[in-house]
View (cartoon, one colour):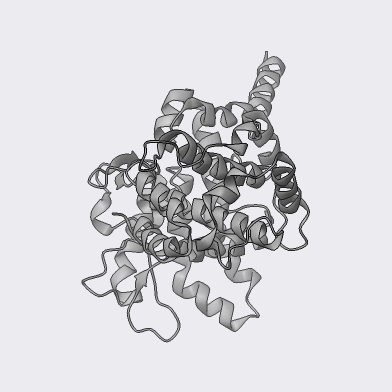
Length: 361
């Protein structure tokens, strides 16, 4: 099991006992098909829902584990509407339309299982009435809309190289008067630039970067072996290629990984950090990489840039030179529908290319 899945599986095991018995049964049913990370999100969604049920007096349970099937069975449509309003208007932690859609989808999955799959001792469905079957599953996340939101917020053309160079050198000039920031940058600039370069030259997800081990790297063939999202075969790693620039940055980082981060032999992680108060380097966390990219992006003048938008930046650039099917494979998408985002993102670039051709002729 890869690192992030292992962490999420432990969190899932901790949270499951706080859920009703039928939710725990649902989790067991789904474990062979869904990743622990996905199921952990489900449980968090159910926690929010059950807390709301009890606060609204729609459940008499003293805690979430005591919520009953009958209480779910007798929910009315107005209750579901009330919950949707709560998610979109609550003062703390208001949810976007996409998040609300996902939370309702989590509930639909649970209610479908209870009403269509799970059985009691007499072979009847556990849930006799499924209120969530009446809730329309609206498609929120259209590729064209996603592309419109991303335009201007990703790196394009020369910016891909410029951002890596900025991490190497430009950032130090911007924080020259901040001794603490300057010291941290001097310690980590090769590693940080390498991470950004690898994503911008391969399109890896941040979770895939976190899970990388030194043994996954094949520099000669410019290839990595990666645990891909959605692949539940824990024994198989997908080969993913990267561009030559990333090879140079990886070689530079690897040359100092051991000496600079005091990495013990037992630590197999490719990317490591030497945290305050520690004497040995440990695997970088997903949160640390996300925070690191945001730090550089703000100084670079791209405050909307995130680690996931680095992946979008690579994908847009890659799609201009390849077809949608090659892009899908490189990114590890389940279907070309997700990859369509980059077709819309490159509309502007393609129209500019046509204008340049017209002018030259």
